[in-house]
Image (cartoon, rainbow, N blue to C red):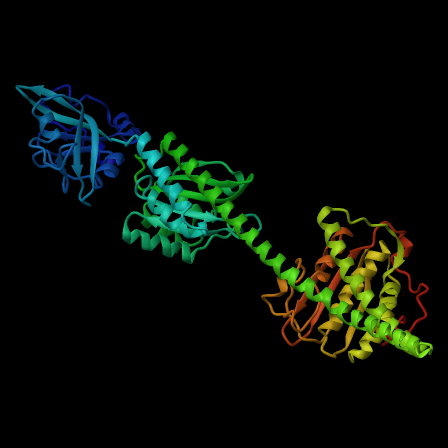
Length: 585
């Protein structure tokens, strides 16, 4: 503007006297640059004396030196209701001394786009039917948005699209193509349900070349919640955003110069961000963009976008619930099959042994002989073993029921975790011997805390039985140690291990990392273990790799115990084998 202002002795002194004194340079420069309208000042010779920034944006040309026959370089004046060129341009009308108030014109810009302008032409220094200069003021006519019928039709089409498939995510890009370019020039749809990383699931730009840039941009720079500007702030606020974007906004959102370059190439100028809210939680965001700052999103368009987002969030949430329901049914059916098999397994030998004993009693009675005490004892031992197994299975089912209903109660008392571990190892010694698994306990000192003995024994039993089941005849070691007010128990085996994809789900209900054909169980042991541990306020985790065994680490707060109990070199432990530190069973 400085060069333009320097020319504001714009007319020869012998031209109209009042024109040269219209405004001084400083005031005119300030008014021109602060104006929201395009302002163009031309003298009778066609020299461009002023051409503000808004004129550069609307006409999409740099400030020209002059105009010929009232035409801006590269631009063609056309009718507002069509593409037919105007016979007389607005600038020519003004130079002819004609005052034009609030007219509408069309302008085909050098890039081929056509814009409708509304403005006025003011002739300056009119004498003898001609003017010494002319001032053109113009503003792009902003569309008032979709009418009610169009908005209703858009909502209906979006509803039909969202309801056409069970997997709603597959419909996100077609949904954006309904909105672009009807409602925006570009759009991105993010999904980030609680507990999951946010991601851009669909992106569309009205211009094919820039669509490729937008998709590439999101691929190379995926959302990262740890980086500022990576995700719309509405993920945190849950409120709709409407912003006129500047270069400063784009620079703040860029992680490096390349991303900043790609963002600028998209020429995004207006942004409307609407959260996708389901059950009171933000599960995603709809981001709409326009490339023309004069076409800001209206209040009506904002409401339309919010209604679309509400329907989209509802569709996504319903699809999620359907997936979860189907998965729950699948797990239930799988569990019922496994439970039936597991319950039938002990019942079969139990039935056979009872039936055999019954026949022996009948046969002995027929012969008048007593039944062999040895055979009765053998049969009763099998019956007792199978009854214990049935009891364990039923207890697991009851525990799941209590946990689900929130009725898992703990009765806390002081005890030594090392003693509990030694007692459990002693109980498992016969089973370990049959499986050729050596049991090792490393408990150099007592680890006292306040826990529920029955539940603590259940946890250690589940971890140890799990290690023996999958230990593949390798040694199983148990380590007990203390760190201040934290107790730690580690169970390590050298068995078949767990794959990386199965590891995250082994503590879930009815989940199993192995085939139920080769390994028994209901898939409840580790789930119950985790629930009990969390009720204690502790954690349990596993590390493993296929063929390299597994390690389960249990950490429990020791509760409200005296300070002097935090480090006790030795308390009385059971005298059974395996109780001493480092002993083997």
